[in-house]
Length: 142
Image (cartoon, rainbow, N blue to C red; front, side, top):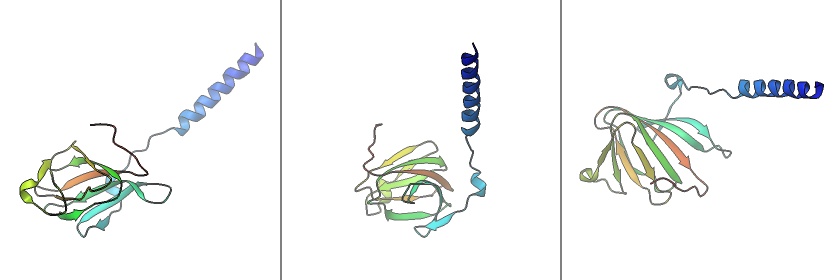
């Protein structure tokens, strides 16, 4: 009986250590620092890869901000509109008639190659979360 008792104590101690270490941490978005990118957008890097490249960022656009065409390369990207209405266009030339509007919860996929696009906050501020999928990552959802 003693060996089983010792095993149970060891398992209980191990389980307690694992649960104490596995805590989720909320991010206080209001306390993040931002840098300006593309002359108008504000970016806060939430996670980086081993090469110190951004993996997950928050991108803020103030009302009236316009990001000119960019993003032809950079790996597969997943954009989620967290708040506001994002005006979005694909291509390297701006065509206001081709813009689409995406609201909170919309998820956009920007292809790894040829994903040039433009974006604007035409109806108030917009906050996006951008996830970079590099090193040959592919899209599994359609």
